[in-house]
Length: 212
Image 1 (cartoon, rainbow, N blue to C red):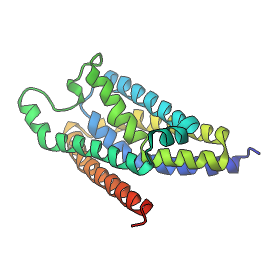
Image 2: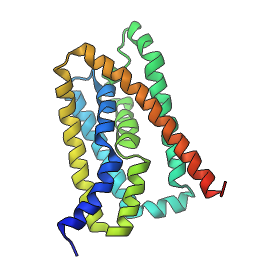
Image 3: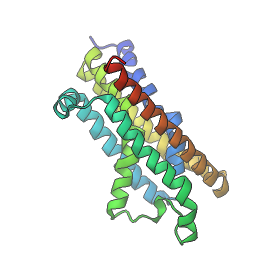
Image 4: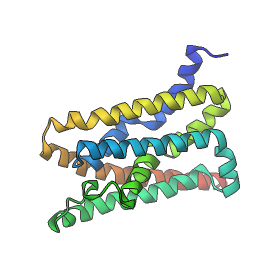
């Protein structure tokens, strides 16, 4: 039976897994030099991707994993490798791109190009917004509370993510461009650390499944 308490019980695990306070600086760092219009367009695409993936995991996650013969641990390693490459590229080659006439960020992308679509999908939509932790939580919550409560939890959490991501850059802009660029570099460093943590967690999970 639906109650506010049961909804909160279904809502909180996903809220924690999404880790909005932890992901927000990464999002701001990746989009700090974008114009407001471009940032809104990319955010809308990223949120669309995140919601679609979340709903797909809700209704067909177990079937997909079983059909492909993969586990959440595999997803952690794969997602971690992608984030690691992206963070290293920004940290090491970002300044080189600036000296060659670009700023090394998504601001150089045209929203009509494939690159812009890819930025919204990876890494913004997945695995930053919907990552292995969120996917696992959705599967567990669905089994514990059912589809209706889990669906409500997903929709409310996605609305909170969108609100935080829409307001965050505006607040940061008040501190000036120098502060924004510093946040971008720090965010790239933390993104690398998160990537390593994801890879480590995936490998440990695989070894645990093998009884090692």
